Image (cartoon, rainbow, N blue to C red; front, side):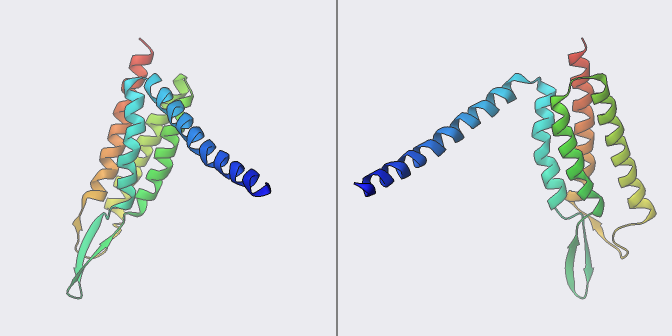
Length: 153
């Protein structure tokens, strides 16, 4: 008899977890469909931010082989993406100001770092990951400004 009770408990847990995961999925979907279009772009742009961080930024040829290197500034894209996602939950004029300042600061430092102290000292070829840092930041900036204009009509 004890075995049947334990089996029922295990079956209840196995049934409970998918139900809760499904209700969490519907909760997130409902939240996503409830925000405006440009905030949806901010959420979806998190995918490009992910690729901007993990993709190599430059490649160089040394010792008869090609090597790739990541942009050290792309690590800050994680902070930018995290802040952009969290700021969706706050509605104020401070939100757009802080977003714009953060993105301009990020783009400025990335440009400065590239021209003042390149992350690869030898001759190199810039790759997709490098450009995705700028594309992602520009897309975040455009989506933030457009979201602000839509909300304040």
